[in-house]
Image 1 (cartoon, rainbow, N blue to C red):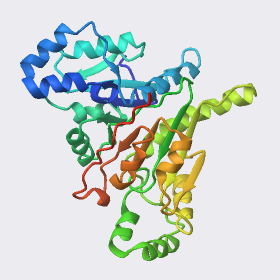
Image 2 (image 1 turned 60 degrees about the vertical axis):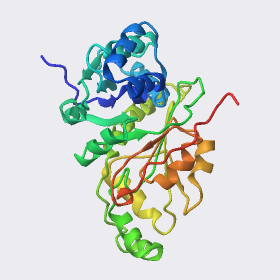
Image 3 (image 1 turned 135 degrees about the vertical axis):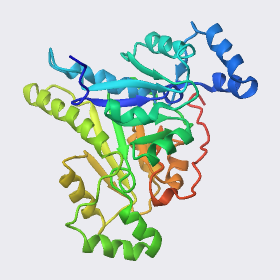
Image 4 (image 1 turned 90 degrees about the vertical axis):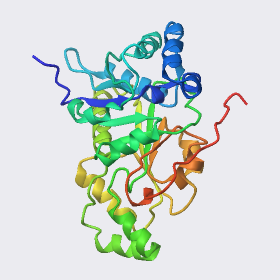
Length: 322
C-alpha cells in the first residue's frame, strides 16, 4: 500500500529557505556549476547553518509528537531542490545533523520541482528563489519567498504564525477595488458584500492544516487542563472597520479560524509584529514586508493585483548579536 499524504499538512521546502546558503551561492555565482559541485563535495561533512525558515520548520515538525500512537504524523516536510542528487547529499546530511525528521526529497538539477507540488498534496512551498516562487504562484500553487532577515531566536516549542488577509488567505478581488477606486469605495464595497464570502487565497489550506493541529491541542487541553497550548495564529491586516466584518465572516465560511486579529487601518504592521514575534509572517505587499522583514521572519506571497510589476523588497539584515 502506498504512503497516503491526504490527511497531513505537507510542506515543500527549498534548501535556500531551510539553510543559509550564502557561501555556497557565492561559489556558484563566481565560479559556476562545476566548481560549486566540487565545493559541496569537499564540504559534505560540514553542516549547513540554519536559514530563515529553519525555526518555523523545526517547530512545525515537533508538533508530530501530538499524534496518538499509530496515528499518521500531522506534518510532512519534503525537500524540493534544484540541486542535483550528488550536491543534494550535503543538504540531507545537514538535515540529519540538525535532527530534523525529514526523509523525503526531490532533486532536479538546475530545475525547480515546484510543478510536482500537487503530487505531494502540498499546502505550501517555501524558497528564497524569487523566480521559482513566482513560477509556482503563476501555476496556482501556494508558494512564498522567504526574505533575507533575522530568524526567530527563542528556544521554546511554541509556533506563532501571522497572515495578512487579502491576497494571502483571501483572493485579491477586494484589493482590485481598492487599487482601482480608492479607500472609500473599498469600504463601501465590503459593506455592500458583507455577507458574501470572498474566494479563498493561496494560503487558506495552510491555515486549515494548522487548524487541524490546533484542534488536537484543544482536545489535549480538555483532557489535561495543565497542557500548554503551543500553536498560535494571528491575522494582521490593513483592513479596519467597517471592512473587518467581511474578513471575519469569510474565515468562518471557509471553516478556518485565527486566535487573534489585528485590524490596523494603515498603522505600521512591523510595530505590531515586533511584539507578536511570529516565526513566519505571510504578506502579499512589498510595501508592508520591507519594514516587517526587519523585525520578524517574513514571506512574500507574490499573488494578485498588488504584485503587477512590483519588486520584491530587499530588507536590511538584522544582526541579533548587536
